[in-house]
Image (cartoon, rainbow, N blue to C red; front, side, top):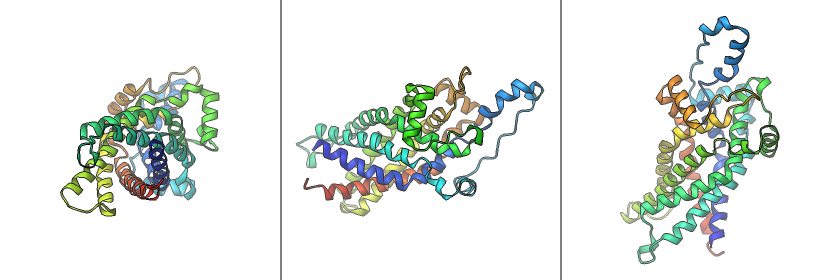
Length: 314
C-alpha cells in the first residue's frame, strides 16, 4: 500500500512536470532578470577600467513572460523551450515521487479511523506536507540544481555557458569541477520551498476537495478535481514565489576559483536582491509561476486521480 502511493505520485509528477516545462523555463529566466550585469561586468570593470566604476551600466528593461518566451525561441530555437527537460524528469522522479508518497503514508497513518472516510485535520495535513516536502527536497536537490543551470544556460554569454549535455553530465561535471557539495547548493532554500509548496499544494487540494464534496457543490469527478487543484496551485504559487526567486539565483550563481561568490547565502541573496531591485523583485516570475503552477497542479492531481483508478485493484 505504501509503495503504491509512491508509484502513483511519481507517474503523475513526471507527466505534469514535462507538460509544463516550457512555463517553468520562462519563470526561471524571468527570476534571473536584473542580476545579469553583476557577475559578468563588475569584476572586469574594477580590474581593468577603474575610471568606469562611477558609471555603472543601466539595468536592462524587464520583460514579461510572453516577451521572454518569444525572445527565447527567436534566439535559441523552439527546442530551447525544453532545455533541461531531462533534469525535470529526474527531479520529479526523486523529489515529487518522494514527497507525494510520504504524504500519502503520513496521511493514512494519521487519519482518524472513526471519522467519515478517515479524514485528516487541516493542521495534520499541513504537518504531513511540511515533513514529506522537506525530505523530498533533500533527495531531489542535485536534479534541481542541474535543472536550474540547464534552463538558465542560454541567457549567459557564449564564453560562460556550461553546455551540459544532459542531467547526468551536469551532475558529473558539477561533482568534478565544484565538488560533491555543489549538488546540494541552495538546499536550505530548496527544502524551505518544498515544505511550503507541498504543505500548501497537497494539503489545500485535499481541503478544497473535501469542502466541495461536503457542501455538495459538485460530485467527485473531473470538475471537482480541476477546481480543487487550480485553487491549490494558486495558494502554492503565492506562498513559494519569494523563496523560489532566491533559490534560483543561488543555484545559478557561478563561483570562480579564488573569488568570492556573488552571494554568501540565501539571506545575503535576498538582501542584495531587495536593495538593488526592490521588494517586489521577490515576486519576479509570478505570472509564469502561477501560469505554470496552476496547469501543473491541475495536470498533477487530475492525472493522479486517474492513475489511482487504474491501479485501484493492485
